[in-house]
Image 1: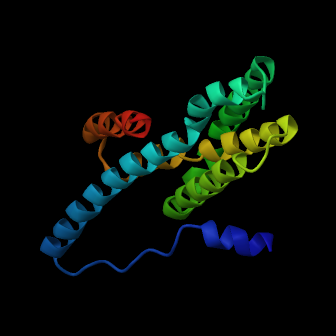
Image 2: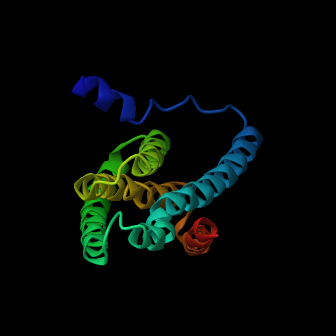
Image 3: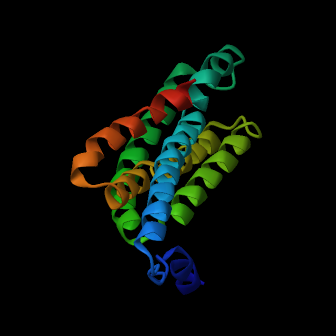
Length: 172
């Protein structure tokens, strides 16, 4: 099972070269636009899943589901797991099919967000937020790797800056 999972996330075989330079240039331009739009809106979507706690914490405290101390513990666990995940998922993103990896992490994070509404147990919230932190950390590294793979050193700053706007898109 592990080998089939690794095979699924491996980068694919190189496609054959196109015979005409004009076809290459046209496809390359189209793919680069697709990549930058995908990482901007994809990472913005990660922010939607990440900020759900900010929206819900007031009503959760007011209704007595959770107290401020427990909320602080959840926030700390989320950040520590997120930081560890960013470190390790960066290595994984360098060697994986970025499209599959990023979309899987976003899908699992969205599922975890749905599960938040089905529990009122502090320990389950803690576990779910730790898992959410891990899967949330899988958005940044694939985005940066994509930018580095598709844009030259001269272009990276501009496109990285465009990608950085995804935080604001997700916050909206």
